[in-house]
Amino acid sequence: MSFEVISILALVAAFVIATVFPINLGALSLVAAFVIGSLVLEGSPDDVADGIFAQFPGSLFVILVGVTFLFAIARANGTVDWLVHVAVKGVGGRIALIPWIMFAVTGVLTAFGSVVPAAVAIIAPIGLSFAVRHKINPVLMGLSIINGASAGGFSPISIFGVITNTVVAENDLPGSPLILFLGSLIFNVLLNVVMFFLFGGRKLLGRRAEEGPVGAAEPGATQLAKGGPGAAKATTSGATGASFKEGDHEPVTTLDLNRSLTLVALVGVAVGALGFGLDVGLLAITAAVLLSFLAPKAYKGAVAQVAWPTVLLICGIVTYVNLMQEIGTIDFLGNQVASIGVPLLAALIICYIGAAVSAFASTTGILGALIPLAVPFLLAGEVGAIGLITALAISSSIVDSSPFSTSGALVTANTPDEQRDYVYRRLMRWGFSMVAIGPVVTWLLLVVPGWL
Image (cartoon, rainbow, N blue to C red; front, top):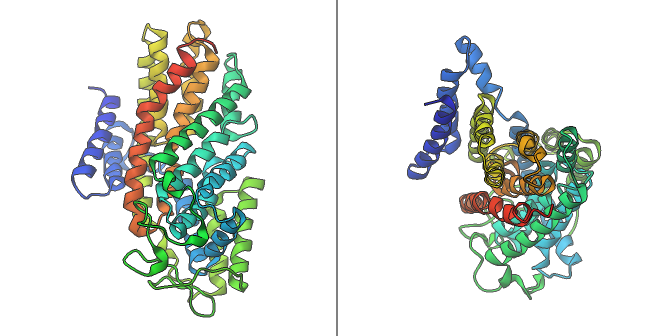
Protein backbone atom coordinates (compact mmCIF):
# COMPACT_ATOMS: atom_id res chain seq x y z
CA MET A 1 0.00 0.00 0.00
CA SER A 2 1.43 3.37 -1.03
CA PHE A 3 1.97 6.28 1.36
CA GLU A 4 -0.53 8.30 -0.70
CA VAL A 5 -3.27 5.79 0.07
CA ILE A 6 -2.17 5.54 3.70
CA SER A 7 -2.39 9.33 4.09
CA ILE A 8 -5.98 9.29 2.79
CA LEU A 9 -6.95 6.47 5.15
CA ALA A 10 -5.36 8.32 8.07
CA LEU A 11 -7.52 11.37 7.34
CA VAL A 12 -10.65 9.23 7.24
CA ALA A 13 -9.64 7.56 10.52
CA ALA A 14 -9.16 10.96 12.18
CA PHE A 15 -12.70 11.98 11.22
CA VAL A 16 -14.16 8.73 12.53
CA ILE A 17 -12.31 9.00 15.85
CA ALA A 18 -13.32 12.66 16.31
CA THR A 19 -16.94 11.70 15.61
CA VAL A 20 -17.00 8.81 18.10
CA PHE A 21 -14.91 10.41 20.85
CA PRO A 22 -14.84 14.01 22.15
CA ILE A 23 -11.33 14.62 20.83
CA ASN A 24 -10.41 17.76 18.91
CA LEU A 25 -10.04 16.84 15.24
CA GLY A 26 -7.25 19.38 14.83
CA ALA A 27 -5.18 17.67 17.52
CA LEU A 28 -5.77 14.29 15.85
CA SER A 29 -4.71 15.76 12.52
CA LEU A 30 -1.47 17.06 13.98
CA VAL A 31 -0.76 13.56 15.33
CA ALA A 32 -1.47 12.13 11.87
CA ALA A 33 0.84 14.73 10.32
CA PHE A 34 3.58 13.71 12.77
CA VAL A 35 3.19 9.99 12.04
CA ILE A 36 2.85 10.26 8.25
CA GLY A 37 5.54 12.93 8.04
CA SER A 38 7.97 10.76 10.01
CA LEU A 39 7.36 7.89 7.59
CA VAL A 40 7.54 9.88 4.35
CA LEU A 41 9.80 12.90 4.85
CA GLU A 42 13.52 12.36 4.60
CA GLY A 43 16.33 13.66 6.81
CA SER A 44 17.01 13.96 10.51
CA PRO A 45 14.20 14.27 13.08
CA ASP A 46 14.72 18.04 13.02
CA ASP A 47 14.37 18.06 9.24
CA VAL A 48 11.16 16.03 9.48
CA ALA A 49 9.76 18.39 12.12
CA ASP A 50 10.67 21.39 9.95
CA GLY A 51 8.91 19.75 7.00
CA ILE A 52 5.76 19.25 9.05
CA PHE A 53 5.82 22.74 10.55
CA ALA A 54 6.32 24.20 7.07
CA GLN A 55 2.79 22.99 6.28
CA PHE A 56 1.25 24.85 9.23
CA PRO A 57 -1.10 27.57 7.91
CA GLY A 58 0.51 30.52 9.67
CA SER A 59 -1.47 33.08 7.70
CA LEU A 60 -4.79 31.39 8.51
CA PHE A 61 -3.81 31.17 12.19
CA VAL A 62 -3.11 34.90 12.32
CA ILE A 63 -6.36 35.72 10.50
CA LEU A 64 -8.47 33.65 12.89
CA VAL A 65 -6.76 35.02 15.98
CA GLY A 66 -6.50 38.61 14.78
CA VAL A 67 -10.08 39.00 13.57
CA THR A 68 -11.70 37.36 16.60
CA PHE A 69 -9.43 39.39 18.91
CA LEU A 70 -10.38 42.69 17.27
CA PHE A 71 -14.09 41.96 17.12
CA ALA A 72 -14.12 40.80 20.74
CA ILE A 73 -13.18 44.38 21.60
CA ALA A 74 -15.70 45.77 19.12
CA ARG A 75 -18.49 43.65 20.60
CA ALA A 76 -17.54 44.50 24.17
CA ASN A 77 -17.58 48.26 23.76
CA GLY A 78 -20.79 48.29 21.71
CA THR A 79 -19.35 49.15 18.28
CA VAL A 80 -20.83 46.05 16.66
CA ASP A 81 -24.21 46.78 18.27
CA TRP A 82 -24.09 50.26 16.74
CA LEU A 83 -23.27 48.88 13.28
CA VAL A 84 -26.17 46.45 13.57
CA HIS A 85 -28.50 49.26 14.55
CA VAL A 86 -27.46 51.48 11.62
CA ALA A 87 -27.67 48.72 9.02
CA VAL A 88 -31.09 47.48 10.15
CA LYS A 89 -32.36 51.03 10.11
CA GLY A 90 -31.01 51.39 6.57
CA VAL A 91 -33.16 48.51 5.26
CA GLY A 92 -36.26 49.77 6.99
CA GLY A 93 -36.03 47.07 9.62
CA ARG A 94 -36.76 44.26 7.13
CA ILE A 95 -35.00 41.32 8.79
CA ALA A 96 -35.21 39.04 5.74
CA LEU A 97 -33.11 41.47 3.69
CA ILE A 98 -30.17 41.46 6.08
CA PRO A 99 -28.59 38.15 4.92
CA TRP A 100 -28.96 39.26 1.30
CA ILE A 101 -27.27 42.56 2.04
CA MET A 102 -24.35 40.63 3.54
CA PHE A 103 -24.34 38.40 0.42
CA ALA A 104 -24.25 41.42 -1.88
CA VAL A 105 -21.62 43.38 0.04
CA THR A 106 -19.24 40.41 0.24
CA GLY A 107 -19.83 39.64 -3.45
CA VAL A 108 -19.00 43.20 -4.48
CA LEU A 109 -15.81 43.16 -2.41
CA THR A 110 -14.52 39.94 -3.99
CA ALA A 111 -15.68 40.91 -7.49
CA PHE A 112 -13.54 44.04 -7.29
CA GLY A 113 -10.43 42.18 -6.25
CA SER A 114 -10.64 41.43 -2.54
CA VAL A 115 -9.12 38.14 -1.44
CA VAL A 116 -12.05 35.94 -0.38
CA PRO A 117 -10.78 35.29 3.19
CA ALA A 118 -10.22 39.03 3.70
CA ALA A 119 -13.76 39.91 2.61
CA VAL A 120 -15.28 37.17 4.75
CA ALA A 121 -13.08 38.12 7.71
CA ILE A 122 -14.38 41.68 7.58
CA ILE A 123 -18.06 40.96 6.97
CA ALA A 124 -18.62 37.75 8.98
CA PRO A 125 -18.30 39.25 12.50
CA ILE A 126 -20.73 42.03 11.60
CA GLY A 127 -23.19 39.69 9.91
CA LEU A 128 -23.16 37.24 12.80
CA SER A 129 -23.84 40.09 15.18
CA PHE A 130 -26.95 40.88 13.11
CA ALA A 131 -27.94 37.22 13.45
CA VAL A 132 -27.55 37.31 17.22
CA ARG A 133 -29.45 40.56 17.67
CA HIS A 134 -32.36 39.71 15.36
CA LYS A 135 -32.64 35.97 15.96
CA ILE A 136 -31.52 34.92 12.50
CA ASN A 137 -30.09 31.43 12.20
CA PRO A 138 -26.30 32.02 12.30
CA VAL A 139 -25.81 29.31 9.66
CA LEU A 140 -28.11 31.23 7.31
CA MET A 141 -26.12 34.39 7.88
CA GLY A 142 -22.72 32.72 7.61
CA LEU A 143 -23.55 30.87 4.40
CA SER A 144 -24.99 34.03 2.84
CA ILE A 145 -21.64 35.73 3.41
CA ILE A 146 -19.62 32.79 2.10
CA ASN A 147 -21.85 32.30 -0.95
CA GLY A 148 -21.61 36.01 -1.67
CA ALA A 149 -17.82 35.79 -1.62
CA SER A 150 -17.92 32.88 -4.08
CA ALA A 151 -20.46 34.66 -6.28
CA GLY A 152 -18.09 37.55 -6.93
CA GLY A 153 -14.92 35.51 -6.66
CA PHE A 154 -14.51 34.75 -10.37
CA SER A 155 -14.91 38.18 -11.91
CA PRO A 156 -12.17 39.01 -14.46
CA ILE A 157 -10.44 41.27 -11.91
CA SER A 158 -10.90 39.03 -8.85
CA ILE A 159 -8.19 36.82 -7.38
CA PHE A 160 -9.86 33.52 -8.32
CA GLY A 161 -10.78 34.83 -11.75
CA VAL A 162 -7.30 36.09 -12.55
CA ILE A 163 -5.67 32.84 -11.41
CA THR A 164 -8.07 30.63 -13.36
CA ASN A 165 -7.92 32.69 -16.54
CA THR A 166 -4.13 32.89 -16.35
CA VAL A 167 -3.75 29.11 -15.99
CA VAL A 168 -6.11 28.61 -18.93
CA ALA A 169 -4.15 31.03 -21.11
CA GLU A 170 -0.76 29.58 -20.15
CA ASN A 171 -1.92 26.10 -21.22
CA ASP A 172 -3.33 27.37 -24.55
CA LEU A 173 -6.86 26.32 -23.65
CA PRO A 174 -10.00 28.09 -24.88
CA GLY A 175 -11.47 30.24 -22.14
CA SER A 176 -14.26 32.71 -21.43
CA PRO A 177 -13.81 35.00 -18.41
CA LEU A 178 -17.40 36.21 -18.81
CA ILE A 179 -18.93 32.71 -18.73
CA LEU A 180 -16.71 31.82 -15.77
CA PHE A 181 -17.89 34.87 -13.83
CA LEU A 182 -21.58 34.62 -14.74
CA GLY A 183 -21.62 30.87 -14.14
CA SER A 184 -20.30 31.30 -10.61
CA LEU A 185 -22.54 34.31 -9.91
CA ILE A 186 -25.77 32.68 -11.07
CA PHE A 187 -25.00 29.35 -9.40
CA ASN A 188 -24.28 30.98 -6.04
CA VAL A 189 -27.36 33.20 -6.18
CA LEU A 190 -29.56 30.16 -6.81
CA LEU A 191 -27.70 28.19 -4.15
CA ASN A 192 -28.27 30.97 -1.64
CA VAL A 193 -32.00 31.03 -2.41
CA VAL A 194 -32.20 27.31 -1.62
CA MET A 195 -30.09 27.73 1.51
CA PHE A 196 -32.18 30.74 2.66
CA PHE A 197 -35.33 28.66 2.88
CA LEU A 198 -33.61 25.56 4.25
CA PHE A 199 -32.26 27.47 7.25
CA GLY A 200 -35.32 29.42 8.33
CA GLY A 201 -35.49 32.29 5.86
CA ARG A 202 -39.23 31.81 5.35
CA LYS A 203 -39.86 32.74 9.01
CA LEU A 204 -37.98 36.00 8.50
CA LEU A 205 -40.27 37.22 5.71
CA GLY A 206 -42.47 40.04 6.93
CA ARG A 207 -40.54 40.49 10.18
CA ARG A 208 -39.30 43.94 11.07
CA ALA A 209 -36.70 44.86 13.64
CA GLU A 210 -38.99 47.15 15.58
CA GLU A 211 -41.40 44.26 16.19
CA GLY A 212 -38.88 42.62 18.52
CA PRO A 213 -38.66 38.86 19.04
CA VAL A 214 -41.33 36.90 17.24
CA GLY A 215 -42.06 33.40 18.51
CA ALA A 216 -39.30 30.95 19.29
CA ALA A 217 -35.77 31.59 18.20
CA GLU A 218 -34.45 29.90 15.12
CA PRO A 219 -32.28 26.84 15.84
CA GLY A 220 -28.96 28.15 17.01
CA ALA A 221 -30.17 31.74 17.29
CA THR A 222 -29.51 32.78 20.87
CA GLN A 223 -31.45 35.49 22.68
CA LEU A 224 -28.39 37.45 23.63
CA ALA A 225 -30.17 40.55 24.79
CA LYS A 226 -32.07 38.74 27.55
CA GLY A 227 -29.20 37.69 29.78
CA GLY A 228 -30.39 34.06 30.03
CA PRO A 229 -28.32 30.91 29.45
CA GLY A 230 -27.25 32.16 26.05
CA ALA A 231 -26.71 35.76 27.07
CA ALA A 232 -24.05 37.78 25.37
CA LYS A 233 -20.60 37.94 26.81
CA ALA A 234 -20.29 41.45 25.50
CA THR A 235 -21.94 43.96 27.82
CA THR A 236 -21.38 47.64 28.18
CA SER A 237 -20.03 49.05 31.42
CA GLY A 238 -17.40 51.30 32.86
CA ALA A 239 -15.70 54.31 31.34
CA THR A 240 -14.94 52.53 28.10
CA GLY A 241 -18.13 50.54 27.91
CA ALA A 242 -16.07 47.37 27.71
CA SER A 243 -16.76 44.17 29.55
CA PHE A 244 -16.66 40.44 28.81
CA LYS A 245 -19.06 39.32 31.56
CA GLU A 246 -22.56 37.93 31.34
CA GLY A 247 -25.45 40.32 31.83
CA ASP A 248 -28.22 42.46 30.35
CA HIS A 249 -27.46 45.41 28.15
CA GLU A 250 -29.46 47.83 26.11
CA PRO A 251 -28.95 48.02 22.32
CA VAL A 252 -26.31 50.62 21.47
CA THR A 253 -27.59 53.36 19.15
CA THR A 254 -24.95 56.08 19.60
CA LEU A 255 -21.19 56.48 19.25
CA ASP A 256 -18.90 57.44 22.10
CA LEU A 257 -15.13 58.00 21.93
CA ASN A 258 -14.17 54.33 22.27
CA ARG A 259 -16.71 53.16 19.71
CA SER A 260 -15.61 55.88 17.32
CA LEU A 261 -11.96 54.83 17.64
CA THR A 262 -12.92 51.19 17.18
CA LEU A 263 -14.89 52.10 14.07
CA VAL A 264 -11.84 53.92 12.72
CA ALA A 265 -9.77 50.79 13.42
CA LEU A 266 -12.25 48.57 11.58
CA VAL A 267 -12.32 50.89 8.59
CA GLY A 268 -8.52 50.99 8.63
CA VAL A 269 -8.35 47.19 8.53
CA ALA A 270 -10.80 47.08 5.64
CA VAL A 271 -8.96 49.75 3.65
CA GLY A 272 -5.57 48.20 4.31
CA ALA A 273 -6.70 44.70 3.31
CA LEU A 274 -8.95 45.54 0.37
CA GLY A 275 -7.25 48.65 -0.95
CA PHE A 276 -3.57 47.89 -0.38
CA GLY A 277 -3.49 44.10 -0.17
CA LEU A 278 -2.07 44.02 3.36
CA ASP A 279 -2.57 40.88 5.44
CA VAL A 280 -5.94 41.14 7.17
CA GLY A 281 -4.82 39.05 10.15
CA LEU A 282 -1.79 41.20 10.92
CA LEU A 283 -3.84 44.35 10.41
CA ALA A 284 -6.53 43.10 12.80
CA ILE A 285 -4.02 42.21 15.53
CA THR A 286 -2.33 45.59 15.12
CA ALA A 287 -5.66 47.37 15.44
CA ALA A 288 -6.62 45.30 18.50
CA VAL A 289 -3.32 46.03 20.23
CA LEU A 290 -3.61 49.77 19.54
CA LEU A 291 -7.14 49.79 20.98
CA SER A 292 -5.90 47.82 24.00
CA PHE A 293 -3.38 50.57 24.74
CA LEU A 294 -6.31 52.96 25.17
CA ALA A 295 -7.94 50.84 27.87
CA PRO A 296 -5.63 47.95 28.82
CA LYS A 297 -7.57 46.92 31.92
CA ALA A 298 -10.97 47.01 30.24
CA TYR A 299 -9.85 45.06 27.17
CA LYS A 300 -7.60 42.51 28.85
CA GLY A 301 -10.35 39.88 28.52
CA ALA A 302 -10.41 40.16 24.73
CA VAL A 303 -7.67 37.58 24.13
CA ALA A 304 -9.70 35.00 26.05
CA GLN A 305 -12.53 35.52 23.56
CA VAL A 306 -10.39 34.21 20.69
CA ALA A 307 -11.88 30.91 19.49
CA TRP A 308 -8.87 28.82 20.50
CA PRO A 309 -10.47 25.35 20.13
CA THR A 310 -11.60 26.32 16.64
CA VAL A 311 -8.14 27.65 15.80
CA LEU A 312 -6.62 24.31 16.85
CA LEU A 313 -9.20 22.34 14.89
CA ILE A 314 -8.84 24.32 11.65
CA CYS A 315 -5.07 24.76 11.70
CA GLY A 316 -4.48 21.12 12.63
CA ILE A 317 -6.46 19.65 9.78
CA VAL A 318 -5.17 22.18 7.24
CA THR A 319 -1.61 21.29 8.29
CA TYR A 320 -2.31 17.64 7.54
CA VAL A 321 -3.98 18.31 4.19
CA ASN A 322 -1.08 20.57 3.19
CA LEU A 323 1.27 17.71 4.09
CA MET A 324 -0.78 15.41 1.86
CA GLN A 325 -0.24 17.84 -0.99
CA GLU A 326 3.47 18.06 -0.21
CA ILE A 327 4.01 14.29 -0.29
CA GLY A 328 2.17 13.96 -3.59
CA THR A 329 -1.24 12.60 -2.58
CA ILE A 330 -3.10 15.13 -4.75
CA ASP A 331 -0.81 14.51 -7.73
CA PHE A 332 -1.34 10.79 -7.19
CA LEU A 333 -5.10 11.24 -7.45
CA GLY A 334 -4.69 13.43 -10.53
CA ASN A 335 -2.54 10.84 -12.28
CA GLN A 336 -5.11 8.17 -11.54
CA VAL A 337 -7.74 10.35 -13.19
CA ALA A 338 -5.53 11.01 -16.21
CA SER A 339 -5.32 7.26 -16.87
CA ILE A 340 -9.12 6.93 -17.20
CA GLY A 341 -10.13 6.31 -20.80
CA VAL A 342 -13.59 7.92 -20.54
CA PRO A 343 -13.23 11.73 -20.81
CA LEU A 344 -16.64 12.59 -19.32
CA LEU A 345 -16.01 10.36 -16.31
CA ALA A 346 -12.52 11.82 -15.89
CA ALA A 347 -14.02 15.32 -15.97
CA LEU A 348 -16.48 14.40 -13.21
CA ILE A 349 -13.75 12.89 -11.05
CA ILE A 350 -11.57 15.99 -11.45
CA CYS A 351 -14.48 18.13 -10.23
CA TYR A 352 -14.89 15.83 -7.23
CA ILE A 353 -11.18 16.00 -6.40
CA GLY A 354 -11.29 19.79 -6.61
CA ALA A 355 -14.31 19.94 -4.31
CA ALA A 356 -13.01 17.42 -1.77
CA VAL A 357 -9.54 18.93 -1.43
CA SER A 358 -10.73 22.54 -1.50
CA ALA A 359 -13.07 21.79 1.42
CA PHE A 360 -9.92 21.44 3.54
CA ALA A 361 -7.32 23.51 1.73
CA SER A 362 -6.70 26.46 -0.55
CA THR A 363 -9.18 26.95 -3.38
CA THR A 364 -6.53 29.04 -5.12
CA GLY A 365 -4.01 26.21 -4.99
CA ILE A 366 -6.52 23.66 -6.25
CA LEU A 367 -7.46 25.77 -9.25
CA GLY A 368 -3.81 26.19 -10.16
CA ALA A 369 -3.06 22.47 -9.76
CA LEU A 370 -6.04 20.65 -11.26
CA ILE A 371 -6.58 22.61 -14.46
CA PRO A 372 -3.15 21.56 -15.80
CA LEU A 373 -3.96 17.93 -14.94
CA ALA A 374 -6.98 18.17 -17.24
CA VAL A 375 -4.99 19.65 -20.14
CA PRO A 376 -4.27 16.41 -22.05
CA PHE A 377 -7.87 15.38 -22.65
CA LEU A 378 -9.09 18.98 -22.89
CA LEU A 379 -6.71 19.55 -25.81
CA ALA A 380 -8.10 16.39 -27.43
CA GLY A 381 -11.41 18.20 -27.75
CA GLU A 382 -13.54 15.39 -26.29
CA VAL A 383 -14.67 17.57 -23.40
CA GLY A 384 -15.47 21.27 -23.66
CA ALA A 385 -12.70 23.23 -21.96
CA ILE A 386 -14.82 26.23 -20.96
CA GLY A 387 -17.53 24.01 -19.49
CA LEU A 388 -15.13 21.86 -17.47
CA ILE A 389 -13.08 24.79 -16.19
CA THR A 390 -16.24 26.61 -15.09
CA ALA A 391 -17.59 23.44 -13.45
CA LEU A 392 -14.28 22.88 -11.67
CA ALA A 393 -14.16 26.49 -10.49
CA ILE A 394 -17.68 26.36 -9.05
CA SER A 395 -17.19 22.91 -7.51
CA SER A 396 -13.96 24.04 -5.82
CA SER A 397 -15.36 27.30 -4.43
CA ILE A 398 -18.84 26.44 -3.12
CA VAL A 399 -17.25 24.06 -0.61
CA ASP A 400 -15.55 27.02 1.10
CA SER A 401 -18.50 26.80 3.49
CA SER A 402 -16.76 23.82 5.11
CA PRO A 403 -15.54 24.77 8.60
CA PHE A 404 -12.13 23.40 7.56
CA SER A 405 -11.82 25.96 4.76
CA THR A 406 -10.79 29.53 5.57
CA SER A 407 -14.22 31.11 4.99
CA GLY A 408 -16.08 28.47 6.98
CA ALA A 409 -13.47 28.66 9.72
CA LEU A 410 -13.94 32.42 10.01
CA VAL A 411 -17.71 32.04 10.36
CA THR A 412 -17.27 29.33 12.99
CA ALA A 413 -14.67 31.30 14.93
CA ASN A 414 -16.82 34.44 15.03
CA THR A 415 -19.91 32.64 16.30
CA PRO A 416 -20.70 33.06 20.02
CA ASP A 417 -19.45 30.20 22.19
CA GLU A 418 -22.87 28.78 22.96
CA GLN A 419 -23.71 28.52 19.24
CA ARG A 420 -20.32 27.48 17.89
CA ASP A 421 -20.80 23.73 18.03
CA TYR A 422 -24.19 24.05 16.30
CA VAL A 423 -22.70 26.21 13.53
CA TYR A 424 -19.64 23.99 13.15
CA ARG A 425 -21.71 20.86 12.69
CA ARG A 426 -24.18 22.46 10.27
CA LEU A 427 -21.40 23.98 8.18
CA MET A 428 -19.66 20.61 8.08
CA ARG A 429 -22.83 18.92 6.86
CA TRP A 430 -23.51 21.65 4.32
CA GLY A 431 -19.91 21.74 3.13
CA PHE A 432 -19.77 17.97 2.66
CA SER A 433 -23.14 18.02 0.90
CA MET A 434 -21.62 20.56 -1.51
CA VAL A 435 -18.71 18.16 -2.04
CA ALA A 436 -21.20 15.42 -2.91
CA ILE A 437 -23.73 17.42 -4.92
CA GLY A 438 -21.85 20.38 -6.43
CA PRO A 439 -19.56 18.48 -8.84
CA VAL A 440 -22.28 16.32 -10.35
CA VAL A 441 -24.70 19.25 -10.77
CA THR A 442 -22.11 21.48 -12.45
CA TRP A 443 -20.93 18.52 -14.55
CA LEU A 444 -24.48 17.83 -15.77
CA LEU A 445 -25.14 21.50 -16.51
CA LEU A 446 -21.82 22.59 -17.98
CA VAL A 447 -19.89 19.56 -19.22
CA VAL A 448 -22.25 16.81 -20.37
CA PRO A 449 -24.27 18.96 -22.84
CA GLY A 450 -21.02 19.88 -24.63
CA TRP A 451 -22.23 23.39 -25.42
CA LEU A 452 -19.24 25.12 -23.83
